[in-house]
Amino acid sequence: MAHEPQPQPVDELDAAAVRTWSSLALAALGRAREDIDAINVYPVADADTGTNLYLTAESADRGLTEAFPEVTDGTARTSLAEAVRAWAHGALVGARGNSGTILAQLLRGVADVLGDEPAARAEQAGQGPGGLLARALTRAAEEAYAAVAHPVEGTMLTVAGAAARAGEAAGAAAGTAAEVARAAYDGARAALAETPGQLAALGRAGVVDAGGCGLVVVFGALWQALSGQEPAAEPVRGRAVPVPQSPDPCAQEEDGPAYEVIYLLEASDAAVGELRGRLDGLGDSLVVVGGDGLWNVHVHVDDPGAAVEAGIVAGRPYRIRITHFGDERRRARGERAQRAVVAVVPGEGLAGLCGEAGATTVLVRPGEPPAVAELLDAVRRAHAREVVLLPGGAELRAAAAAAAEQARAEGVRVAVIPTRSAVQGLAALAVHDPGGSFDEDVVAMTAAAGATRYGELAVAERQSFTSAGICQAGDVLGLIDGDVAVIGSGLAETAEAVLDRMLGSGGELVTLVLGPDVPDGVAERLEAHVQQGHLAVDTVTYRGGRYSAPLLVGVE
Image 1 (spheres, rainbow, N blue to C red):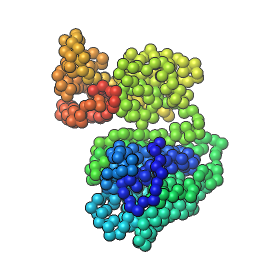
Image 2 (image 1 turned 180 degrees about the vertical axis):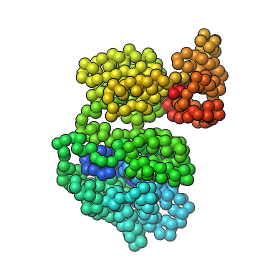
Image 3 (image 1 turned 90 degrees about the vertical axis):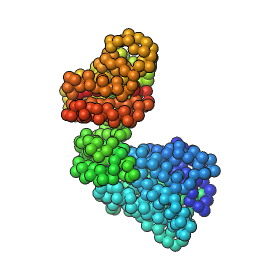
Image 4 (image 1 turned 180 degrees about the horizontal axis):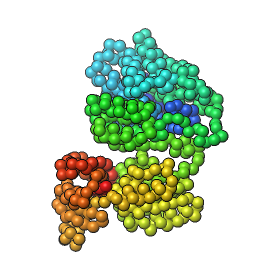
């Protein structure tokens, strides 16, 4: 958790005040997150609203700190405009869940006003910081409502709107920034108390809106940052009355889409407009926030693949997170899932990708293969009755088999699929069906992995003999199914030769996993190469992240 400053009263809303607001909001959400999780019943009762708000605020705070570390020591040399833009960007790239995505758009609205430096200076000179802050809060509420496909009253949108109206009234009366913040805080608290009467799901459970509760925390932190006074009390803690618990756990599985899909998207405004229409037809709880070419997309759907494909049509989606609500509810109740996947992957980006698809991951670092104990720990962490283990390399089969045997002795049913590359693991994970029978799922995943040819590019460390001839230190080696097939001098040229050989026997989908030091231009070149030479073949590209090979290739 970030360092929590001791605020002093301030007369001006500047970069240091924004930094204090961020730190106080993060600390307060950290204290309240479990209580907010406990009252989370809308739109999905998955007990994670407080956690999502905290993680979003943490990303926002990190974005501000990393961009302008000098703000933290109280001697800010950063402008107000620069600070709020960095803060809002940090929230956008790290937004989690429905509530976190809306919070990110609220901060963007604040940044749209305070981040317009010439206009902000002029308005502050004419109206004072109170009027400027009031306008920022109003813009924040407007943009949050606009970002939600179908706004619902009795939610954090209602709380944001009430806070903005109260702040505008204080600003119109020539109030100071602290007075505007106090009015917004009081308006938010009053609106929060009314939410059970506005939304039937809250009224039945006897709780206030969880997202609105978190937003009250954020407004309390704003007032504290500007006034130096600590809010009299935290917002509503815990349940107003206990939420009824059904004796049948399955009865708590609510109607509605089964998956939450979130991803960052690089796309134009026009493409995002079309994307909204596509996603609105696929599910609900659609929130698309951002702008200037970068967006955070959130939607609840039954077909997560279709939601991701819609993003691919619109632009370049990445940091894709797919969450199954049934799994989240079971974890919240401390129950063991029926089935899980454990994937061994060589790269932080791949670990994130598999994790977003629901797998428990084990990260392989160069020269440090995981031991049996580490694999067994991952199987235990999956907390499931049935586990599919994807070792990701022939050299790990023995360790995977030993871990599986020990897990079976503990009562877990484990199947090891003999994947020899991370791209085979991705192919297997893509067809994983947790709702089908275990045997059928294992057969389908094994078939998908076996039907995927795999390639890899590496750099030779010394002169040596290979199946493709003699290589020199620094040469680029193109391996296909584990054997050196091409020796080249450049990464892109060698990759093209590898792709041509792999596609010579046919294929429908090419998967490219780029290492951390490979420029985006290489991916664009390879995608174009596939498209020109193989019109019926699709290409998907991922970032392997730290510890991954320069390039992994899969052909299905």
